Image (cartoon, rainbow, N blue to C red):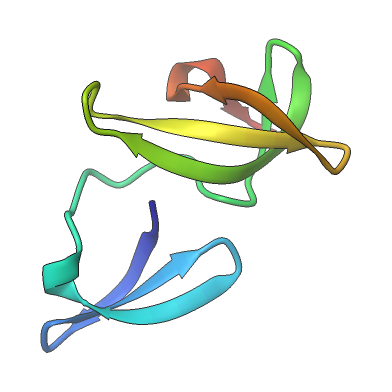
Length: 86
């Protein structure tokens, strides 16, 4: 999942973490704006960490968040309700 920064003439400038890219809008499926993004620091039941990836769960229609803590990837996936910005 990516964040759209700008849209112009059928092109979208998107952001994924600290990276930015230009892509044709026809390649994107737009959803409601998200509250959490890659690189955000978050709290969860096991402590705190950083969002390292966000994957759209097509069957459930919700984002799944993958975290890292102290530089180590956590294998569990989290839902928006499981996380709070830190």
